[in-house]
Image 1 (cartoon, each protein chain N blue to C red):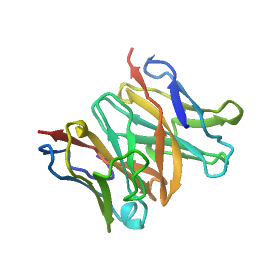
Image 2: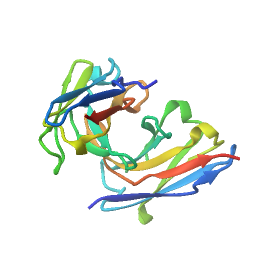
Image 3: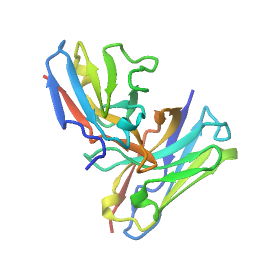
Image 4: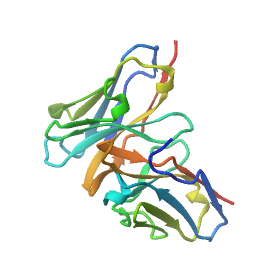
Length: 111
Length: 121
């Protein structure tokens, strides 16, 4: 069981907007640590998608955005495209682990 | 341009010790603030952080695996080595190394391609 909780799956039609939640606790997100998001396409390594709650690395489309509030965070994807079909993971820092924690991952299906 | 690549055995027997090497370029582990982490992913499961080594040789381990893990660095060769003792079939996973970037907490901005390690007799 992961320290950060994500829904196992979400889906949406092309062009739609979907959100993926990431729920933590007072020892990680609620303690003020940033939330970061990764996209993992099938058979590939994770790729940084959002860092520092809502910052996109160079090359990441602005269709992807992040937000954080209290002990949770969200990833929003607008204008859904077939190529967005992947697994998405949130990540933060946890004081009880003195290390990094990941969510359980969310599989996005584009209908 | 930062790149990382993992190398090591693809198959280990139960109770053996796994040794993985992360070879990197595009940064130096002697630069203040820099770190390299190891993360694994069992087939079909989530990512799990294992260990992290900092430029000043400070080390952090996942508490539940701390007794089995050792992370070291060779700054001159741009390598980080992770050893995991007493391997078990549940340790079968793809092991990734990644470049750590500072933040409020930290994140991994560049990842290796990963190496699949199977534990079986």
